Length: 299
Image (cartoon, rainbow, N blue to C red; front, side):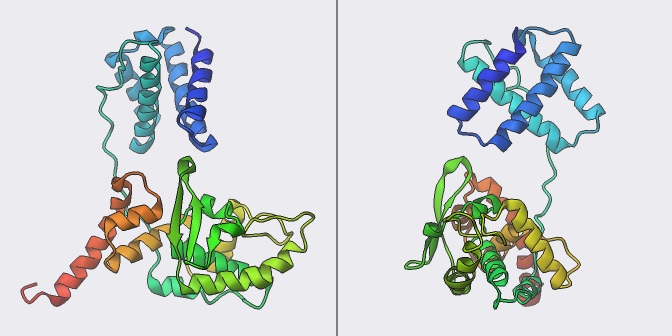
């Protein structure tokens, strides 16, 4: 069998039917290439020859390379999807990966900022300057909505609806969702759009409707957002590492700690499955335990 051919048609399937992002496709290809190299080394030239015993040998090699359980699990999941595609196209009769158990993974508690830490970040920006206004609006929006940095970087001015206090976000798989934002984010956005953004836009060589601009007047990138947050942390003299996703974790954790229900937080985060949101309950259990120990007569 021509492995290159199957690699190409699988990528087409991911792009056209699954609407997968380039980032997702890259990981699928990495996993597929690892498997194809293993098959060539084992002298297996037909994808129909892959069986349970062959997969166990493949897994042994992955563990011998000191791969984490998360990495092994991802590779198995990728190959299961690949063989499901082959089965649908009637290239193979059955999916040999269906009977392979995914390794149990540790579920680390998401890192988040305490309220005192997040409050310090809100005091470091000079809102009398264009960049300070932008940074304040950026921080307020990320923490106030829990959106992903990739979603934030592609926001347009027209995505903000001040009349009802919502932002239209384009998430994974090009799925749209509306997220409400509060008064603090509204004030910061209004000041930035009416003042700082106009000054930044004047520095650009061509008009743009991107919401967040860099010092040259062009669209701010996801990498630029990460750099801005790191600078804020240094100014606040915090001995922590803050990445945009930590603000997302903080958003979800603070909502659940304050009594928000899991389904609502799932919708706000844009999670397809509730299990993705449930990782935050590990954090809130500590909060509930503290309340119980402080308030229950027999605690």
